[in-house]
Image (cartoon, rainbow, N blue to C red; front, side, top):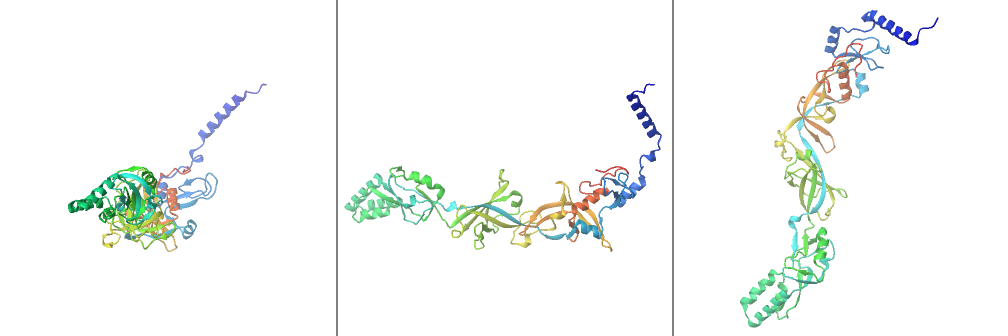
Length: 440
C-alpha cells in the first residue's frame, strides 16, 4: 500500500491543530484582565513588572513568559533602599534674583576714535624718509620728522616772504607767516624772517604724538617712497594712542539679553589672567545679531592698558547681568531694580524640548519612603553663576520651599511610565496594556 503524499499529511496536521485550538476554552490560552482590577491598579499607580522579560502586568504572580515572580512598581514611591540604589538627591526651590555671569571673548584693538592722520599740507616730491616711516608700530613724539619734500610751492612762498621782509611790508609778512603755520612749517618762516635763504626742501613733521598703526604700514610705505609725488592731503601716517584700546567682545545672543550699556566689565587676558586694575564698562551693545556666529558685539573702551594689553591680544570679559521682574536687564549695582523668581538647579528639570517637568516630593513616610508627584513647569531663562552652576527661572509649577529631585530624576520618571501614570512623555499617563501583554 502506497503512503499518502507529504503535502496531504501537512494539510491534515494543520486542520487538526486549528480545530484543537478552536475547541479549547478561552481561559486556557489568554489571561483575561479584570477591568475593575485594571482601574484600581491604575488609580493606585501600581503595576507589576518581570525583572527578566519585557513584560508588565496589572496583577502579582509569575511572569507568563519566563515564570519569574513579578515585582510591584508603584509610581513615585521609593523606599530608602531604592533611593540609595538610584542615587536620589534632593534640593529645595528657592526665591532669588535672576543673576547671570555673562562671558564673552574678543580682541583688543586700538581706539580709533582718537586716531590722528599726518598729511604734508603742501604738495611736493619725497626726497627723504625718517624713522617714523620705516619702523612698523613706531612710537613718535610731536614734532618728529616724517619726510623731506622738494616743494616748489613752499620755495616760492619763502621767496615772497623774504621780499616782504626786505621791503618791511608787515601785512604781507603776517599773511605769509599764517600760511606757513597752516602748512605746519612755522620754523621755515622764522628762518626766513631771521635772514635765512629760501630752501627748496622742507621737512614735514608730525603735529601729534602717537604710534604708527601696524595695519597701515604697508600702505604708508608705498605712499612715502622716495621720488613719489604727494599732494597736500596725502595721508603719510595714521597715529593712535597706545594707552587707549577698544575691546570688541562677542557675547552669545541668549546671554546678551542680560546686559545693558554702562554696566561694569571685568577683563582678563590669556597671558596675565584677571586684570582688576583696569576699569571698564560696556560702552556699546550692538542691536544686531551676527547670523554667522549668533552673537552680539559688545564694545568696551579702556584707558591705561598699554602696560598690560597689546593690540590684537585675546581677552575675556565677565559681566554680571540681572533681570527685573519683567525679565528685562536691570542695574546690577542697584538691588532695588532686581526681580525675584523661583529658582531650581538645571539638574532638577527634565525636558522633551517642548515640555518641562520636575519630580516634587509629595510626602515623607516614617519608614523613610518618599512619595513624588509630577510638576509640569513653565520656565524662564537659564542662568549660570561664576562657579558654572546652572539654574532655571521657574515662572510656574513650583513654590519656594518645594523639594525636588536633582539626581535619579529619569529613573523616577521611568518608574511612572512603567506604572502607567503621568510622566514626562505621557502627560495623562501611558495607556495600560491588557494583562498578559507586552509594553514596549
